[in-house]
Length: 222
Image (cartoon, rainbow, N blue to C red; front, side, top):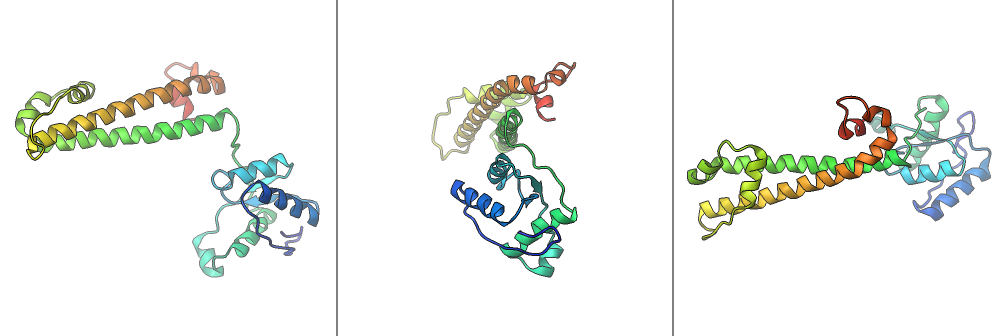
């Protein structure tokens, strides 16, 4: 804590749980009138304490992490970085407003995170399938070559490999079947998330969704 001219008043640690947050607020208010609290990571590890302070009527200002040059010059320690946060607010170097972590926008953000990871995993899966097909026996490739992605996945998923897994052909067929089923699972997950997102995005941005050519995915990314 610093005063209005930057003089250090006190430094205290608090637990990151509701009891710790209550103690923090009591400590802040016991010193003097609280102008603002500077905080790093209000959209990540500081999200919960940001919500608590805001609900308590305390203004929170987003503070960037100290750059590497500053860390090398002054060292890294919790008290030093704690002192740097309110100093940045007082000087005007920090003036960012924390993102809201409540409401439909946060719900959309959470669901889009799930969708994004599923899309990435799906892309990795189809790439792995195509890479495995390059080295697969030619007899297998002849049946699969030229198939569009959807038909390729369905064909591989419905295969019933038989034989000894020590045989490269059987191992390749078995691996391709499992990868295809993984792809189908990820595709289903993406479709389910899209179904969850559609009403939320429409509610949050009805005018955007109503525009020609703008769907849930595009609108939800804004």
